[in-house]
Length: 287
Image (cartoon, rainbow, N blue to C red; front, side, top):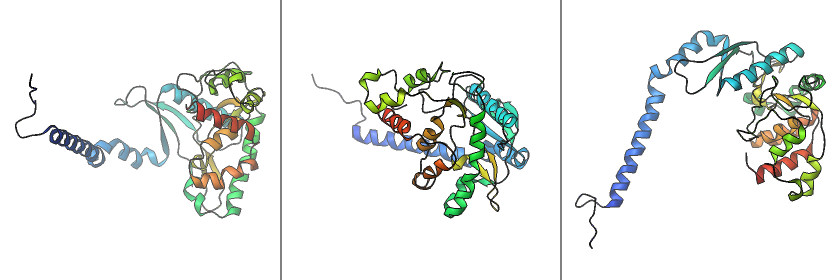
């Protein structure tokens, strides 16, 4: 039985597919222009920057849980250490926000982002900045966890960390329970000896920032004095090796790998064996 074409006479199927693809591309371009060009679409942001934004900073959070965890961490660190952390006023949810999105309102930190000037600094200047972090980290390590052996956010809730599967973020009873998630419940006897050795160790549970990178450090551009440590969204009570591991894992650029990671030993204890083991697990079981 002869097949009939659904295309109009004289128009091939490939031509129609090409026409549809061009139309979809046009719609995407139009939407992008609309979002970027319509001044009223950006009006709330423009008004904020011109008024309250001169003194306050609004950090977006994907959920109220994430906001509460970060707010708790910032307030705890301000209360128990000398680390410069912006004062937090609270959390607001805009009427047009999607899902559970909200914003953490805090004082705007003075200075500039270290990441914006790191490339321009000489080796001596970089060392001066990094060495200021050591007493901060030492203070954090001396604080006992109020949650015992549990691995959790500062307020005791589940952690916020993209290294972990979205629905497997605790809180964890202890380091062994945490390790089981890192290896996706894979039995230890099926893993290489280095992983077995790393996961057999027990570490102190310590207060951890979780993302101590130049992008989260504010400095005075003239004196290079640290004015604030920001972005406490991944903070919590973790095994002592986690701070080093996360700093290595989140060194995204070649510059960070070359000039920041080698300086980590100046202000924190390094754990190369645990980090190499976790690198293997990330390759085997991508989060």
